[in-house]
Image (tube, rainbow over all chains, first blue to last red; front, side):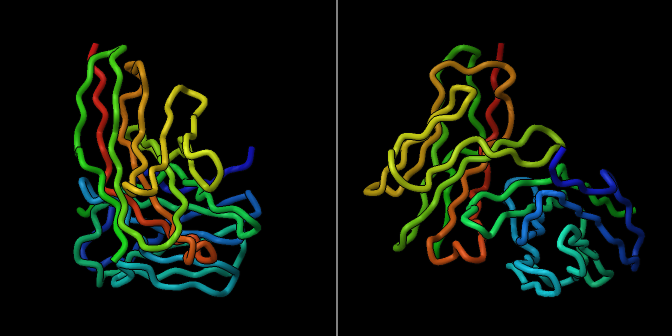
Length: 113
Length: 116
């Protein structure tokens, strides 16, 4: 089945620790996105990538980093500089060839110990 | 600045009653419009979208939305809701100038609570 997978489903971070959230897609989509979801605030864009080896900051990139070494993968690292990381993180992808629609993964919930 | 406003954070409704979830946007350029649904602890699923053509768009599970350019609205409606429609609903806008990057602007979400 084609789709987007995110792992793990739940992730716990200790103080001062960097953690990495995985996002993989087999839809052959060029563009990929990371969003942060907090209650009552909708979704806010963290980073996005339109092509391999290229990515741009979104609206709330501080404290996060990404890489795009393969078309299928777009991992997000939550660094120790992100002081309030507790949230639900969603990955999405989109085809650049006439595709306006973003398709979402199941999400990762990050909690701070 | 462009924005999307979902006027109701929560909408309680009884089963089999009609419902309308409101969405307004501010933009001076052409837009594409989307409604997504999110069930608890899951990702977002596309419900319906308006790209061009008929201003009334429908989903396979009975929802419909109408693009009203003069009122800059894209309200979501269903004539008779089911318990299984209980979820959070997000309205999103893609500006025509952002169609290359695909950057969506999301509303804050509306929680639809269907009561038996």
